[in-house]
Length: 205
Image 1 (cartoon, one colour):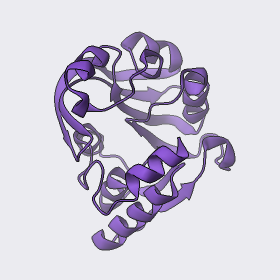
Image 2 (tube, one colour):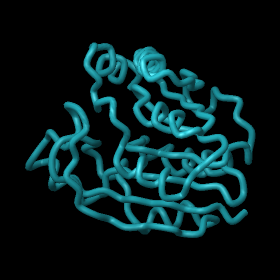
Image 3 (cartoon, rainbow, N blue to C red):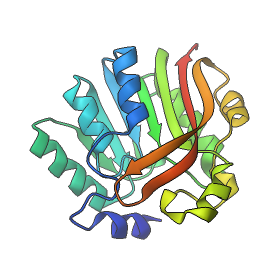
Image 4 (cartoon, rainbow, N blue to C red):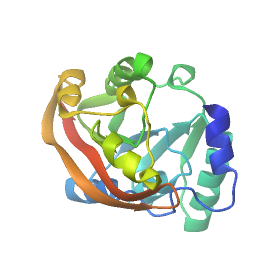
């Protein structure tokens, strides 16, 4: 997967554009988030840069070195600072309860590691901190077959459902959880009508 993402990000053009994800942007503004935010699988940095521009202390990571290069270029061009690490979660030295918020934006993981990763990431959020997630739902497979330009995994096990969110993040108060159809317009690889899960949770303990 590292090679896949390096190949995608090594081009000059930003694969998913430079603008932040719409749901991420709206959520930051609605919740008036502050403090430290963690962005796993952050790619080329569009969300990290937006968060930094809005006063958040940003830490991001991804397995792609090319993604980091693009993210740091974008941060410099926008006059903000972000901390960006390259590697997988188990290579990071993050401490439990150390972030005020965490956002997973189209961060899809293999089925055999997804639940474990989600729970480990949830441990990094402080009590009363927020988890923000947007990703393709299991019902996106049918839409993807009709329009491959939507993007996203072709394996059902890597996709999300409302039931999964409730089960995995049991120690979060649900602020928002719904499956919805949206018209994606993010760079060259997220385009068209897509079915997504949107989740905002507030950590109880």
